[in-house]
Length: 497
Image 1 (cartoon, rainbow, N blue to C red):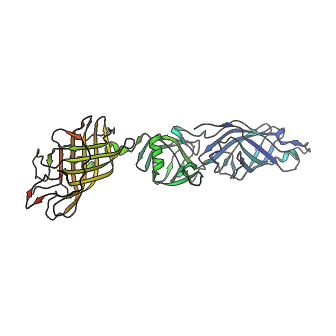
Image 2: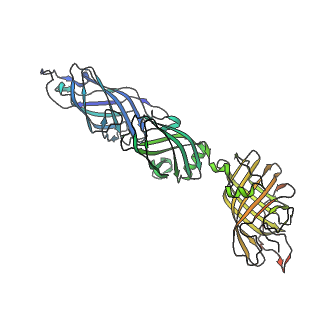
């Protein structure tokens, strides 16, 4: 984020007429001959603009109980803003006007906050009109003081792009994860205010920036996002607290931008019962996303993994090969069967065509179709959109929750399985391919031809290679099983008659 150096002009107006403390009537003078205002900093903090300036008494008389207040704040676009008050020390309560005493030759720092400052204005030309009442100066012929100094916008952006609502709060992001439409951020807050903070609360909403280019009305805006609630807590002086927030419901556009740019920008609020921040908005600006979709490194659920891992290799990792394409597993050779119907090595099953498509290499997701075909006849098929792939190099593992149908001679059986396929992508196809599943659910099966729920099978390609193939197509969906005589191979879900 660029820094903008510019000038900030401030007009100070006086409206009073009284004698000096010494009793002598002062000569009519200009306020700028007797007082100066110099900028220390002008920083955007969240939605607000924080201004620190110094009032200097250049006269030879003491200013006692001088009232200072603002009457207008205008940016270079002519937009006016509210200035809810000043304060003399960081953390003080803001007041609409303040009383300042300045001895001759002395100065006083004063702070002000401009609320809801237009983000398109980089604090490059802001005019604050003040009213001051140094009664010791009497009637002034001119009451204008130019506040001079170099300013910088967004100077409070600190570690990894986190912008603090207070210079005495230190933020640090330790990890970020993008998981579907959720953004998980692990970060810490260090309390350097010198005060124990009580009832600290992180806002339960975050904001997603919608640019004018994406809105039909051409007006840029923020939309609220749901964020996991963080309970109120107390922070001791110098305590460092680890916190996690989760943003739900990211739009498709924002999710795509995060995966493409590997960074995000969001805002959330923070409050405290016994300390007043310069602003209550914490901005995460251009924070790097270190891992995109954490679960791609552990694709297979633990309970399925525990059943399969001794029978099938499972490849973890976040850099799997691209496996888009159609492959045929034939012969389908069984290696393990909890039903007890088939011995290891049996291969009398219909060839299985598997289709991987829509693989997203950024999100490591893909879609799946399957057909079991014998002589142009489909005897079973299943699908699983939106699944995930893990692996490294040429090795991969995919996990699918499939829904499918087994087509029998007199009725069909709908099935649901938890399917794992592992292998090694080669120029010739997929070598050392394993196909393993658990039957999760099935519809009514009066003749008991399909394996029971909870049963588990593992297959491999009998010749060690699943070759590339064209996709299986057929309008016929029949099998010829009559009078107990099997004229075609079984599907992978079938029980032997």
